[in-house]
Image (tube, rainbow, N blue to C red):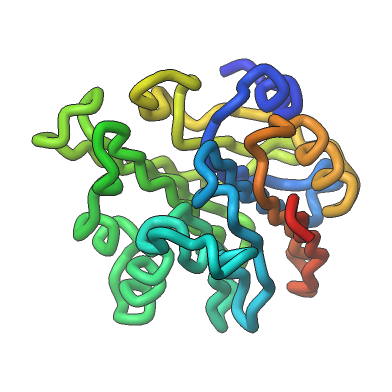
Length: 236
């Protein structure tokens, strides 16, 4: 599989929707997390990321303009005490957390969920689980080409990520009506930025100016567990 330039992918795609990158820093010393959200409607754009004790949550920037919080207010990132970090584009973050704490696998937890009920798009649920040793998993739950009668679940596991590489998955294949779900394996992308700020600056600059909403980037030192975190919001 070809290693792609994440910035070029983002720069050429006006609306990838929500996206997750998990991977390894170029010096092979840190696990890397990227999560971003975008929006086309006023309701979707009216959000920010806010840091909480175990990760981040989305919240309305202007509470008076919030219409329907059901699919846009959630905890995208939750860290567990054992060093596991869960990253998703919806409330399945909590489904995975609760499953892991109950002794289940993330796959068992996600078998209880499907795509989002937002027809005709039926937005896929994308999820990532980063383990303390830097290995990780990605998954996508989506409809069968927009047919809600069939739910498809795909799981990808990466035991030993290569230095300077990540895997990128996002919700929408292209900016169309209705929005088609992501297709194929998570993209193999290069991760060369030396720290969270440098990577956040790159990603933020290449996300579509009209549609980008918020960005979370974190580098986790694999030896110490120390975290280097950057959160960017269009509304500040």
